[in-house]
Every structure is written in structure tokens, then in C-alpha cells.
Amino acid sequence: MSTAESQATTYYVAQRGDQLFGFDTNYVRESSNLDQLRVFPGTRPELVGVVNLRNTVLPILLPDRWLLTDAIEYDPEKPIIVISHNKITFGIQIDRTKGVLVAEESAHHPHPYEAETGYFSHLVAMADGTIFTSINVESLIHQIGQISS
Image 1: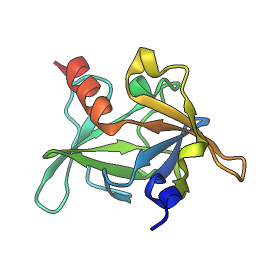
Image 2: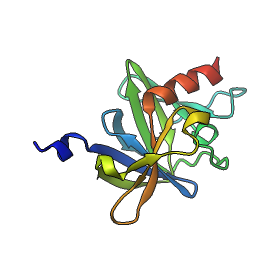
Image 3: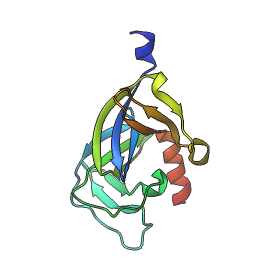
Image 4: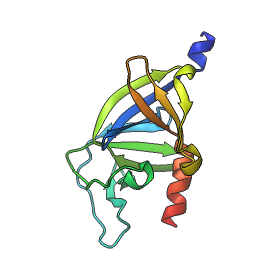
């Protein structure tokens, strides 16, 4: 393996609103349309409800508050990506999947909101002109826990 390959990061890139976000594939368990959502009245607006995913209760979140996008209502026709880290697993709704992209270290640039959010880690500029915000999943999980408590 070359040095360039060892410094590359593989991202699952998804669109939410008019922005693209990349999640390190080490944290993305799957992406699918999940049905049979159970909604709980009176919960925080970012918690849509839960689904039973292979005998696991999976909370489904609308990520707009954390991704700094305009609020979009839950749409059962849109995909959910399942994020998992250290026994914490949840789903977030996206508008569509862009694909799986491999970004070399040189494609990563400082993100202007990294200091503000803690989880917008880089702007990634691909050779084909695609630009997305890479998400530090561990920091995002921490932030979701802070807001939810």
C-alpha cells in the first residue's frame, strides 16, 4: 500500500438540503429506506421516532439542527443512513445518496465552521468538482448527546 493510499479516507457522501456531507465509512453501517416508523408525540423535533431494525430499536433523527441546514420534514420515501460508534447506533434521514468517495489527504481543507461545531472537520474538494463537508462522527455523537440531555 502506498503512502497516499494509507492517508486516503473513504466517505459515504449524502445530500441533505442543498449541501453534501461525508461520513467516514467506518461509522456507516448501512443505508436504506426504513418503514414502520413509530412516532412518539411530544419528543424533541429532531427525534422523528424509532424503527425496529433486526430486533434493535433504532432512533431516527432529522439531522438539520446539527448539519446547519434548513429544517426539512421527515419523508418516508427518503433514505436513512445508520451510524454506529461504540455501541451507539442511530439513523439520520438524508435526501439522497451521492455515493462512496475516496478522498486523498490533499483534498481536505479547513472547514470554516469546525471551531463552532466541533464536528465539521473538513471541506473536501474532489478532483471532479464535488465539494462536501466531512463529519467527525465521534464529535457529532457527543454533540447530539449534549443537546439531547
